[in-house]
Image 1 (cartoon, one colour):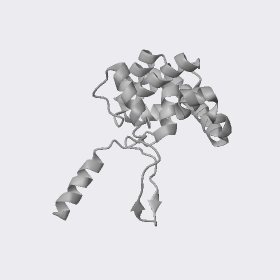
Image 2: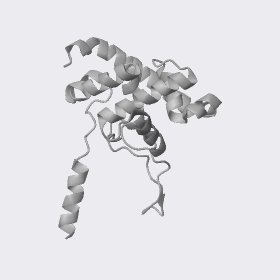
Image 3: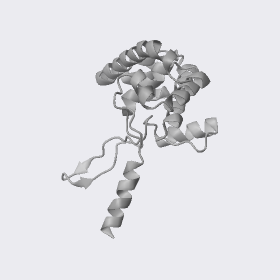
Image 4: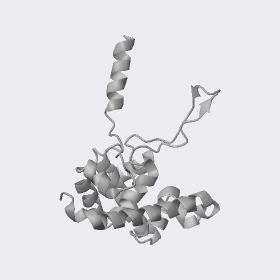
Length: 192
């Protein structure tokens, strides 16, 4: 019985898509996972968000790990406690925000651990932020601050008391710039 249970757990664990070998290079990501490129391009076109911004946010949130979750607390070193939030998947979308996305887009079969759904979610959220907070869709720095803090939190300036988050947003901007330069070099060669 234990062998059957552990075999089942191994099978379930093996279903998660492994992150790309080189998450720092957009060309390498799409060379490894060519089926991600049409989904990313579709989200970029649908929501008017530059592809490098979508990728940079996903890179920061999950490092392209399909089943990413915040680490849980542990008591006495071995008793698992709760996770600090319901964030899950490539986009690290919270349960309530994901439900709002599904209701707003009608994408009822969407899953946070599916790349295409997650990149579309990020595009949708960036677009919503552009409309509500008047942040350019291409502004990776401020879009990331709003993505992390929520649109209301961004409007209230909650990030101003979090120097670590401001630094992280700078990293997202730099990553978007790197992805942009990489894609300018290789995107014409990538499969349509």
